[in-house]
Length: 244
Image 1 (spheres, one colour):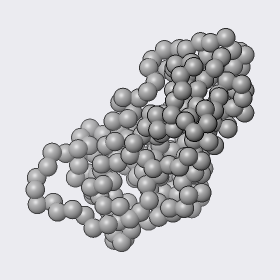
Image 2 (tube, rainbow, N blue to C red):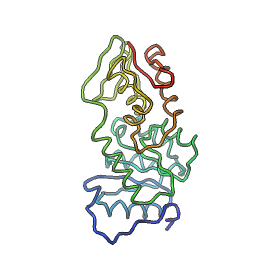
Image 3 (spheres, rainbow, N blue to C red):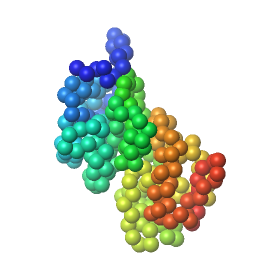
Image 4 (cartoon, rainbow, N blue to C red):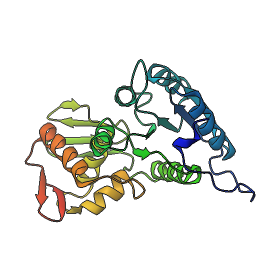
């Protein structure tokens, strides 16, 4: 078993309440020993675990099983993790599933690519099983207390439908990746309010996810390209605000 990709597990002598009871998790990796290792630790916490060996299988499993969360490797045959994430975000039935990359690739550019593909978290190996479970719990909590409220926000030229994850600009629907949508929804929730970088990171990516300033900048740039640069203003050294 390739447990060398993970730090040593904590002691299991003390009985603990299952942390992930009633949660469905899909684990995607092309190495069977990794699937076995992860499945074992997740099932111990009460999760129902499904597995897939590549991106093609993952998309089909996600469509059929509708998991609460997907742990996704990057380097896989047939379809790599990045493309898998992109395709999951493009499909209506899977676009809102939590996706976390779990990979030995820890380079900054790889993490940025992961978030741009639509990932909710990027977790680098090695990691202790208990820490991984904690990260998963944090992701699930964030979904349950999502920053979006139900309903629609309408401005003069923009409409955000949080129920359908749709943005309409000048009567034309825009298909935004999940993080871009969440970032725009945050900024537009209080027009004119300056959201600091810390506010944005905490609300959109969560306090348990480590991303750099460049990640925010990339998402802001892409939003400006799609909705117009006049709407999102930079407050130098502080953060961003939305203006009509």
